[in-house]
Image 1 (cartoon, rainbow, N blue to C red):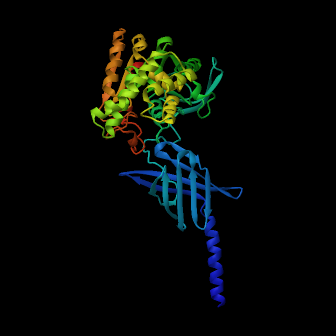
Image 2 (image 1 turned 90 degrees about the vertical axis):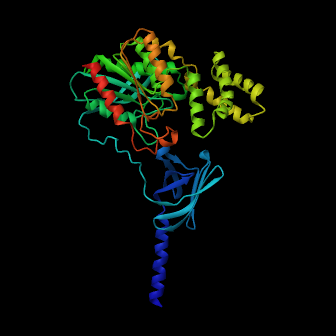
Image 3 (image 1 turned 120 degrees about the vertical axis):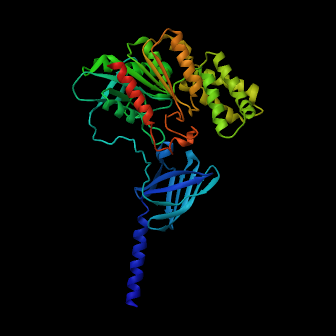
Length: 454
């Protein structure tokens, strides 16, 4: 009897200790419609209350804090209200939780095991590096904003050609982190090893840089890059006559605008727009719908509302709240019978952000024809965000129309908007693909740039 009592006491003690061990990192694979997605939860205690956070590396979600977390009678319950997510699972063994993931009413099985599943990124550079790296700061004096960045050089001392990396749409850090990838870290690594210094920086309001991203216009972003350019000119290790710009997507809008007013040595445009912004966005939406299985007739019908909305936006110079109010009147007059008011309000909100408005109203013909430095434009045939054929043709046409004969256009077969080797180019592939950027593209860029700075 004494033995049994001792055993039961030990068992109870074990269960108490065991229950406390729910804190830590947990990972699970969510499967839906033939696709899989890795989710990472971290559960911890703060002042004796359970808290948690969710990371989805493939979707660039990192440490999204939960609204509520509880652990009672071996049941772990987590809610993230802004994402419409609830998770409930039963802790069945020390390293396993069996449960369900619910988002916006859809329930899927999700079992968690201990650990943190990291995405495989074989190209991601790992320090120590065989070149010089320096954390730097520079300022946009016009807006009194200080920017943080990383300058890499082949050696600490010397006089090197250089490039500035300009990221795409949305708030981007210096590595242009997206879907678990760091393309600018890789690009900087490759270029620096080839003998070219590279400056990459956190955009305003991102990382260690000051300012408010959502309050910035396209012209503000241009000024930010000009500030980076002027900073490099003052660095004694940089050859001020050999500074180029590499712009990806929206960065491919900013780069040529800067080259018109500054002594830029060369441009590399990656998946950059060449056609008018509203046309590009309609093509982008059409290609997206086709990837989802819609036929031409369905796509045209779906795009009708957006086409007329974009035409209205182009017909007015209004911005901000004034444009938002005008759009709501336009929507109410034309689409109140097909969409709910809250949906129309959300659409008006999205279309009047400064960045998106800048893209919609962008006219590459207004600046590309004024660029006279050497230009390399690269795109992938599977890019549905900025379709390669139309945009590459337009870029070449406008550059040559202005008399620029130093133009090289290159389309890579099978590459998506991030210049990864892909099957369809769909957004859902970005995080699943282990490759960060095609080695063929990296080699092509390095060879072309070194040809310009010899």
